[in-house]
Image (cartoon, rainbow, N blue to C red; front, side):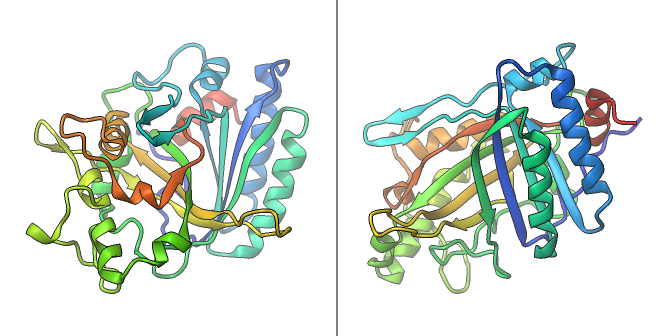
Length: 309
């Protein structure tokens, strides 16, 4: 039977999102987890226009499905080089809510809280605030280099020859921006950091493209093969409730790949953990605060694991 992705993966009309990363409690058995997640999926299926997608950390997948695992699935590990860091906050369950209708998100979020209250603890809960032009809070378009049409399938889905076919490897990182520092730069200097023009969203070329720009460090090939990923990231912003609390705003980097190498190559190049030793200048203005790797199974595999009727 042909493997297909969970519904909503390639629906780019959704501008409203909620990302919840959870840690399963140690005393929770697999059947209890499956029952809670099945309840959530049944609810989401009953609401037209709402997507609720599930992904799992390595340890949680082994608990739910000890018979097989995709070959590249590993937990996220800390990365560091000099003053640069990408910390691990590896979770067990990732829930991605998204819709073109913002009114559908709150009630679904309540269902998540109620269904998983006795199963897991939420370690991250962010509202995505993507605008019509898909611009990050630094003012640049995010995801311009995303593959299009059928190329998205090759970039995002595990091939049919492998375990987990039709599913995806997933990365999530919360990047906190220093907007005050970035916005002090001239537009030209900002463009050199990113590697694209700010207004027209055109990639810099030749001598105008710095080797430490974000585009230069993430546009990578291995043995002639482009390390393309499929991004579904969202800007986020939390409220400043007290004067002593520094505002928290940035990008929830959220992407899919057919093989884990596509993530690791990009992260190592950003960190400067490569032979050229060049790091991503954007990391001077944005710091990674979390990091997890996930497996998002195909719709069929998810159904089989949860034993959904």
